[in-house]
Image (cartoon, rainbow, N blue to C red):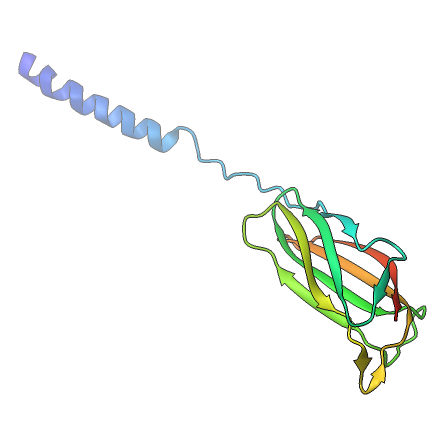
Length: 151
């Protein structure tokens, strides 16, 4: 009888543990909360109405941030004519932000304003600078200012 109990008790214990696992708690999938928060743009330079001399670079300084992860930022510059398309010089470029970044301090002078465009001097006057930042979820924020192109 002792031998039977010695072998039966461990077998019953194993069966009990296995049956508890199968019929016990179920795995609950994690709740995925969608990212609906837009990134933020804090533009330092250029400042509104800043005078940009033809043939020089525009200094771009800003801080970008997002609650989850940044993806890219875009700078577009065009002549200010309230929605009228012109043949004046325009600029557009998108920079990809390294993966995993929630914040980025941008500080560069990569945007060169030419003296001439299609054989003519670049038109002087007001130009719109539009900056768009996108996060990994596709949310985007935009800010814009007007700068002045001068000789």
